Length: 531
Image (tube, rainbow, N blue to C red; front, side, top):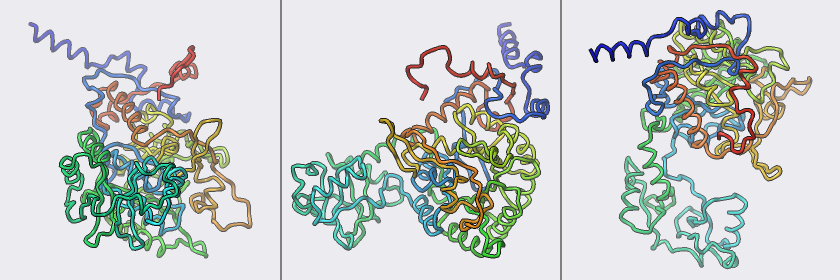
């Protein structure tokens, strides 16, 4: 009797009410009923469901293409104030992906990709070095100018051969007039290890070393000729050891290297024709360096130039994952999929620093665009990525009910790892952040993204982005921890154990302006924000 009562209780808990079904609609019914209006994230909310899923037990891995799987569905945008090698490394270490922008010389982009692919976690491959004839005062000035959080430096000669280690306890103003050579710990007293000795697991080897050598906190890596090749610190080793126990592992390729993406443009030659040779040469070099995915990024992805570029790349690299965009229609998804794209970027004008909708009068609010594109993508068996307009973790949850991943710019632009310059205003620290359609960005090389030529000075170019400031928000680790926590909470409320189940279970309802105000903190004096 008790068992049958329990079974009845379980059935009642999991059964949907017909009254609920009247108000809360699955995607097809909801968006069809709202087909005459464009909806974005704040226009809707998700209805909760019976759940036996704890947020901490949800899985966030997502497959974007054959050979490209991420452990979290987050990608940093290919913007010149968001993603270079430092950001891409941080994203991959957290399980995501960074798309390195193309607003730089091609050779530099290759170097940025190499830094990510050959990054050995915990091994500082190019540590800051000083010369023996420098003064301690010069070192103090360097620390102040670069705002270094450390004061111990390897000392090398002109050939890069290790001479010793300048310890932080002698880098003080009282010794400013003394030369480094007078104060360093000599080579014979410095602990080192050769690159060969590190083996396949450098962190485990370094961890054993620090355990065996009480009081030693830094290990220098040299080659057989005693040239400096890296530095491992005990604090990094301890942090990595903890990370290995984390729920979300770093995103790596088959050779255990961090994953990395790079953006390319539909480059044209002096005659206005697609420069196939240059595009293939550059992407070939990217592939040689181990790039995991290339993104053909323009403001208008449903165009001949983008389609032809994707076709050229697909013919040359049959197994290379290709992202293409940006688009907001089913026809554009079908077009790019037929050209050979594996994942499509959805979003035209939703970004905080994008003015495409104001300047050009085009673009579809993001949730409607995602729904339309998702249905075409499902038929073509490709992925879609929600690109732009995301300001909080709740937006990501809503986007992931339709997309396989999200691309964020503004969310990461204030991070330490973003390349933007830092400025101080009224005691607060900010980083420069600009749209790739801003005049400054187009002058630096992104004009092709918006259908203009960089050297076009004969006519006025209409900017489709602005330059702005983002308040400094700390490390990528910190920002992603907050976002991941929010995503997992949302999945718990819907009883979804993974992202595929989230897409199946999601039910939507429109929200009034009063409902939007109700959703945020109100009728209080806020003392401390949620972040």
